[in-house]
Amino acid sequence: MTDTITQFRLALSFLTTLPAGSSSSEVPEEVLGKTQAWFPLVGLLLGLILFFSSCFFQLFFPPTICAALLLLLHFFFTGGFHLDGLADTADGLMSGKPEREKIFSIMKDSYLGSMGATALTLLLLIKYSALTIIISKAPLALVIFPVLGRYAIVQLTFSSTYARAEGGLGAIFTNHCNQRELLSAALISLTSGLLFAGFIGLLSCIAITLYVVIIKYAAQRRLGGVTGDILGYACESGEALVLIILAASN
Image (cartoon, rainbow, N blue to C red; front, top):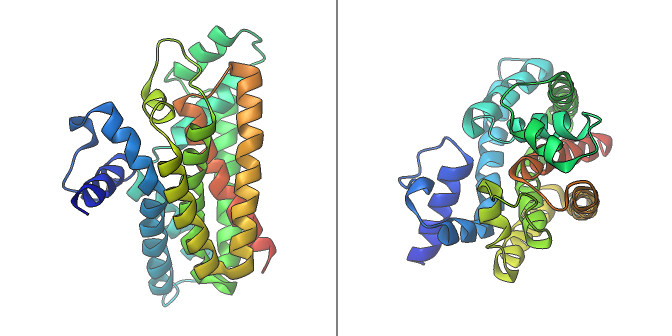
């Protein structure tokens, strides 16, 4: 039990700005990699915070303002951690460069290109539009989109190899994701989906699973594997996919 609590606190420290009492920078790579088992549980905590915040905001504001405030909270509690990966992935893969090394170089560059900026803008517009609907029709379903976004990371690290020969942050997770981590993450995600969104939650779980298979295939074909940026892209775009499904069902 102590090990489980420690791993969850490390996952919380790594994925969020919430006080966790542990720093992910102070542990061996293998230990940090094993925390993936609890990534969806961190997402569940974020989802519950967003749900209760939504209930409070709706006492004073219309759904449009509530949606904007929820996006702000999501950004604040995650530090925009995976948004950077989404932008870098868009810049690299949409650069028109066929050589992998050139794509990697673009993705590592801290400069935000036009493709990355466009991807960020469109992603936030999609999330905002979906949230305005979900807040009014099925606010409890808000809980699951951070859960499944983080499950996407675990499924991708389990099934993929790391693309860069020199290694990187993402390699910590692709090198240390075994069946235990995947099964724990899948169980938490499936249970959360069914509990908070019923059949639509189950449908969202299936959609995320299939979506990650597509990402893995595309990354393997173009880059020879995944990178930390690809993992961030999977999380953010996976969240958007779940929000679209939830909004469409209402």
